[in-house]
Amino acid sequence: MTRLALLTRALSGGGLERILLVLAREFAEHGNEVDLVVGRADGPLAARIPEGVRVVPLRASSRLAAHAAILRALPGSRGAFWPILSGRKPHWFFQHFPALVEYLTTARPDTAMALYTPVNLTAIWAKRAGDWHGRLVVNERNSLFAKIAFSKRRFARAYPALVRSSYPLADAIVAVTDRVADDLARLADLPRKSITTIYNPVVRPELTSLSTEPVDHPFLHDGAPPLVLGLGRLSSNKDFATLVRAFARLASRRPAHLMILGEGGRRESLEALIRELGVAQQVAMPGFVSNPYPYIARAAAVAVTSQHEGVANVLCEALALGRPVVSTDCPGGPREVLCDGRYGPLVPMGDDVALASALEHLLGDPPDPDDQRKGAERFSTDRAIPAYLDILAPPVLP
Image (cartoon, rainbow, N blue to C red; front, side, top):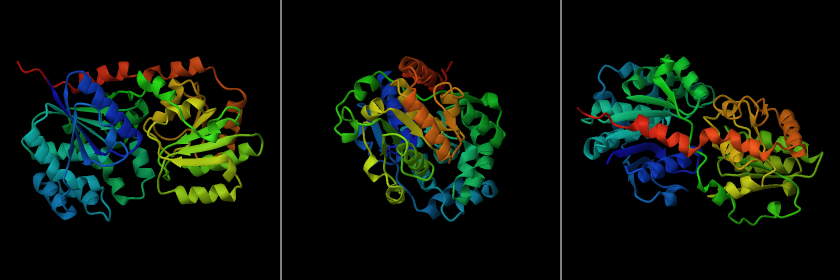
């Protein structure tokens, strides 16, 4: 039996964490011992840990102690690390470096896979610093270009140099789309052939049954106007303000409702914009929903308005449920998911006029649901899990 460690930042309700739980469950069901090693063990998904999966919360050291430990463990690398460790707000996960070294050298998993750039870097450094010689796989979830271009944190500019020097020390590099892989290879000057693309295991057998669970909301009642749905953290990256503006244009031309599922720091500004545009009666923001699939299955159109996305899992889920979709043509995966617009229109980022037009077209002339489902087949567990198990398998000793 192989012991697999999945390393990530937290158990919040984002797409990365949802996919992480799918991977953990599938790996456990294939007979592996699975440790879910996290910086923060609380969050909306903490109650949904798959049976047989062990959660290992990492203790955080002080910023000064953790960064000093990194520099001591990797002598001669001060110049490379200094920009990312000395910034005003370096990523909080780096403070778990000592605890991760301790975990790897005591638990000694056969294979560890890190997911998310700061976690990837910390895992590589921890392997070099400790006495653990298992297989380490790093998983890049988003466009490296977008991490730099859209981050407000100055330390993000140091990522390409750190990735360039650190990722070749991993045993394998995985990207969630070809576009993410191409971007990673270009910006970090890595050989493209060293990066393996494995699509997210979004489409899984229980998706259909989850989508049929009852939900009670006036916007979903029979006879209600068609529903436009947005999902995700209420953050600047998701740019729900553009969706609200586009919806206001749409609602001026035809009856419709808008629902945005998610929670985050932009709630108040979005609510103010909704009131300003006079569409408060047609817009609902219920907050985080643990099972969004009944809402997706009942939506007339699902919209992604992000500034960047690794994959945009919601696009895959909506396709799997046969729903019409529209997305911004942002850095990352949406263009690849939608096959250059075959399975849904792509509109410029921040363009509420183009988005309103695309939504109006989808509501008036929706695509064939069966054709939409075909577009999701690339993102099934049947395809992704064997590929992951193959790349995670530890070498067989002679």
